[in-house]
Length: 112
Image 1 (cartoon, rainbow, N blue to C red):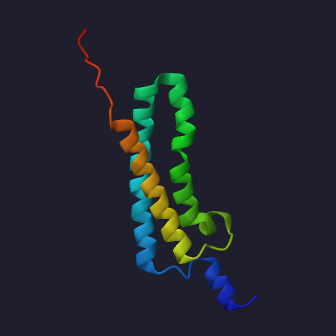
Image 2 (image 1 turned 90 degrees about the vertical axis):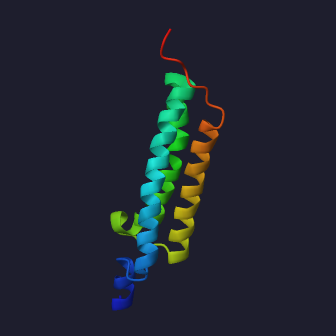
Image 3 (image 1 turned 30 degrees about the vertical axis):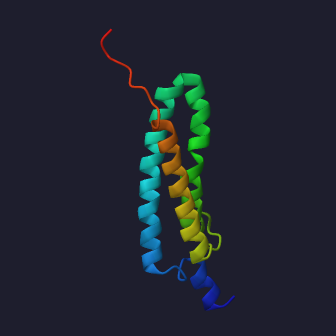
């Protein structure tokens, strides 16, 4: 086992700008996912909202895997292209989920 493979294992191949960009995208994905979960419960109620919750947790799981899999599991980190593409895909999916949940949402009146 050479020094090159040991360095790759701990993220040596990830450029700092790609790493920072994916971490920023990861934070935005979590914000979008949190909003989508709240909107899912608001729109669908308790039981169906919980079912929708499982689907809405997929984008953060994808972004987390794409950006930190090697750091958590000890496995070799994916290539920079996979990390950036996975984070961008997770960001797009979570933004689309918020948009679909908000596009025709009726606000209920609080007075009654």
